Every structure is written in structure tokens, then in C-alpha cells.
Length: 201
Image 1: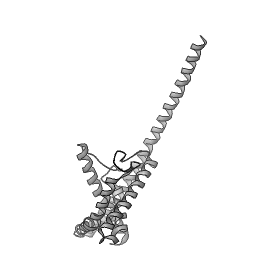
Image 2: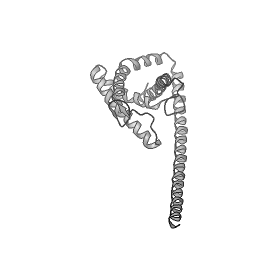
Image 3: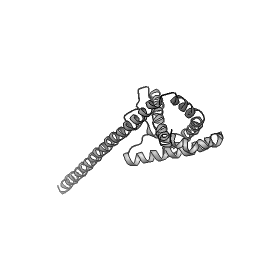
Image 4: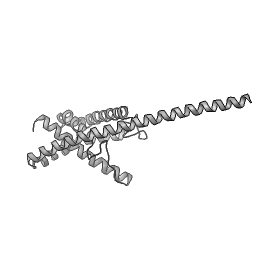
């Protein structure tokens, strides 16, 4: 498997696994079926990108558990913060909010989640990824390639559709806000006229 294929493989597999884990967790917590993540379909790209970052930044620390934990804690917390900030800037909404959690930074990261990231980094490098690679190696290469290509095309289309819908929704909301502001202005003018007439009488 060359480097490019490896990157695509890591991105697709862990975007899907991340979606399963997060959707399951939220479904249990909210006691209803929740389709978690930014996209419509069963992928959470933040986990795919996070897995790529973990693998290529942390694989060299495989044999130093403590340093691996600290590095995962810092790198993935930084990644989560940047992604949260970018989503808020681009789409004007919060996809997660840790404001009520202990030791949070602008509601985008918190101490508890960062500790989970540290543990996840250790498990990912030493347990999860090696197992995934073993399982994938048991599947004929042609099936793996078809799955990866299909998934990349799907995620690309899904991202474009989702982003377009969100942008359109934000434009409509901005227009509604402008209309509301104009109505308030006109009501204020009318109230001033009424008060002036009452004062003159």
C-alpha cells in the first residue's frame, strides 16, 4: 500500500468508525437515534483527519506510552479546537460546546475530552490501527480499492451538498434577521410619531 492509498484508507475507515462511535454514544445519551456529525451520511471527517494526524505524527512514539499520551493530548486537542473554530466561522454554528465542562477553552475543548484524546492516541497506535490493518489484509485488494474509491466520491458529494445547504440556510437566516431589524426600525419610527402627536395634543 503506497502512502497516498494509506492516507485515503486511514481517512475513510476512521471517518466511518468515528461516526459509528459518536452516533452510538449520542443515541444512548439522548435516548433516541442520532445521526452524528457534519455530513448527511455515515462519515465524520474530523475523525478521519484526526486519525491521519495521529498516525503520521505519533507512530514514532509507539514505544513511549507516556510521551505518546501527552502528544496525543496536545495535538488532538489543538486539532479539535481549530476544527470547532473553523466550523463556527464558516457555518456560523457550534457543532459541539463544552462551555459547561471543567477546564474548557471557549467551549471548543475541555480537560476531560483532551484526556480521552490522550488515551485514544495510545490505543490507536498500539492496538486499534494494527488490528484494523490485519482485518483489512484479509479482504481481497480489489474490494478494498472499490470501497475506498466509492467512499471518497460519496464523502466529496455529501460534503458539497451539506455545505451548500448550510450556506443557503445561513443566507436565509441573515435575510430574515435583516427583515426583523427593518420591522423594528419602522415600529420605532411609528412609535416616535405617535408619541410626538400625543405630546402636541
